Image (cartoon, rainbow, N blue to C red):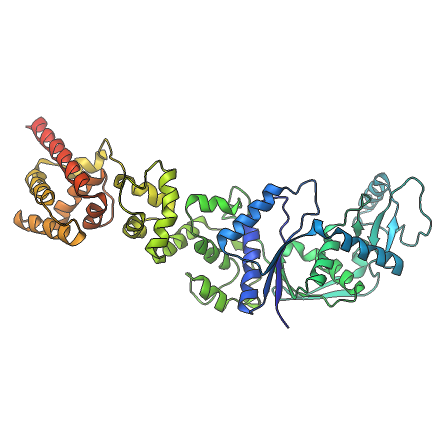
Length: 471
């Protein structure tokens, strides 16, 4: 059997964290089994579905690299097929017209609630043979009234529903629009879906869908209902926790492979391993290994994983990804070192590309003031003469590279009987304006010879003025 999974988002919203995990698990299982991954857009809610949301979903999936083997397939393009099945079921007695008004159904619901009963449609039109004049009916599926539905769920195990607890679901509204549970059944059958992997909020829909598949004479797919994702506070994941458009993470400088790595760990594990490449995830992932417990979204863990993938990414690729973030930070990428060199130099200290761009600001533009605390500690009169010597040696350096820079600083430090920290940190403050940067030779190499010398001149003036003021 060829494994065929499907991701079926509704464009009533954008692609958020919960949806990304579902898409990833569907994609990974299909890739792991060398099967097919189908993208289906469930846009039957025509009032709330928007083209902008469709584009958001497709753009998000494209950024993450979750490529589909088939699709996108739009449900609104398949209405004729749904209505064909509805007509067949009416003719075969598997469905019926319901003429109940909204008021009648509300009264039924109120009476059931007053009696403490479960609210449900009571099937009063189930055996009706005569139409009601002036009323456009809905179509309901004639659900079996006896027996049970058994779901052998790959995540939750054995789940049983009694048919007596399931009412007759509306499958076509009075305006002729097919409903979600009905279209899903037909699509899963027509598209030969072997495994339905989705959130456990869909579990209650499953027995209804299995009964409708049975009415079509089709064996149901294998189901796997994924546990919820909770916020760090244990509440249902919401926008305040990070359940936002996944593209927002792209704008913040997260790498797609880091997002996928984090998502796969929300419910699945492989020993104690935390960092996975996409190739490793594909090779190791099995839907049977997903656990039943809810997972918690942890922004700190996501940032840590993003840093691990930044460290591992090829410098050329990372540099190309960095350019838009330099521009967004108001920097001119042409007014400084190549972005790949910056990425190589800053990768160990950046959790996101946006953070990297901001940290590298001094490589592309001059600063006007030193960090006050760093200057007070490091730009002192005692370092004035070593700083002058470093400045002169660097100014006359013929080949500007890390090895030559490091050699000069080491020689000056030895000549003044200073350890590297005593001279390296003042140079760092002088050239970057602050106390934190990559290794000093890397930093100066990136800043460039002309800028380095000019900034050392400025720091020397600052130190001299400070010494004169204290004299």
